[in-house]
Amino acid sequence: MATPSDVTGTRFIRVLLSGGTSEVVLDGETVRAWGTDGRLAAESVGRVTVGAVGGRIRWNGSRLLGDTLDVAGAPGLRVGNREGAGRVRILARNGELLAVAVAPLEAYVAAVLSREAPPRFHPEALAALAVAVRTYAAGAAVKPRDSAYDVVAGVEDQVFDGMDGVAPVYREAAGRTRGMVVRYRGELARTVYHSTCGGRTEDAGSAWGKDVPYLRAQFCDDCADSPVYRWEYRMSGAEGRRVAKALGVPPGKDLRIAVTGRTPTGRANRVRISSGGVSRELQAAEFRKAAGYANVRSLKMEIVPVAGDWRITGEGWGHGVGMCQFGGNGMARRGAGYREILARYYPGTDISGETP
Ligand SMILES: [Zn+2]
Figure 1 (tube, rainbow, N blue to C red):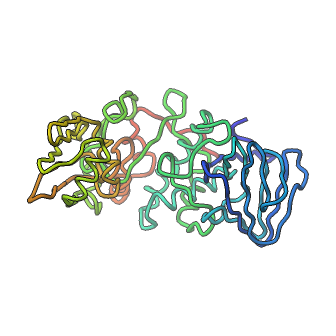
Figure 2 (figure 1 turned 120 degrees about the vertical axis):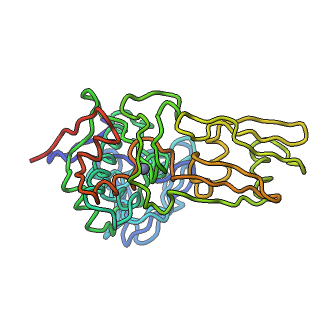
């Protein structure tokens, strides 16, 4: 049900492209829509705006159709600013529209790889990531986020920006590992990954409060050549005040921001913000989100006040749980194969589903 299969056995994944809006713009030379009964419901030349009216879909500001349409464009379809989304299902729900790409799983894997890893990565590192991306997607299809879709197209799951223009290196990595998934005691593993661990990966239990036997901290110095192995962010006084305010502490002249708790791997897990008698201790992850993920790249960080600003220095990029991508690339460059890479970052798991 969650993963429709066609007669050739192709698996599909349903990717939420946009939600929470009342209108979506579809672009194609010709845009066609079919109802759930398989009959052509509408056809337009050029750009089409679809809107939600309660539980029904309004086509190009005029006709009211049913609550679900399957849309395709010729030669291709653009949804919002995403190219090459393939076949897209549009659903109206209480005045909101959902646009869900129904993508062949292997094409999705290659497309996600193209957004999650640089093309200069070693083929074995890309192959390891392809298996992780596929496993994550297959797991999501078993436990979908919503009845209408399995994953979202952004960083909450895996970055997906359409299937057009995916470079051959990514398609090769997906093709070489076609169908392969990581399992732990027979179950699909939760193959999370991140850019750079900065020297040691993180326990799932420390990061998210729930232990996972194969997501345990591993020492890793193979990511030492990552451009974000070490980083520094100078947070200005004004930016610090904005962040404090956003996190519920009205900032005065005596504003203080400090790490107050760390996990066993040295990552911050508590941050205290105080000013003028108001003091709030919060999850370090909340602070990182408010300050911006691209500024505070990981929680393996120190915060030091410097002349009215804050100097934040850190190691690595991302949550640090599971596979360190730059670490996998470093291993591959030393001669490791993708199986070895996966075995290191997901210890105790097996790879299965190899297709001949
Ligand atoms: Zn690493």
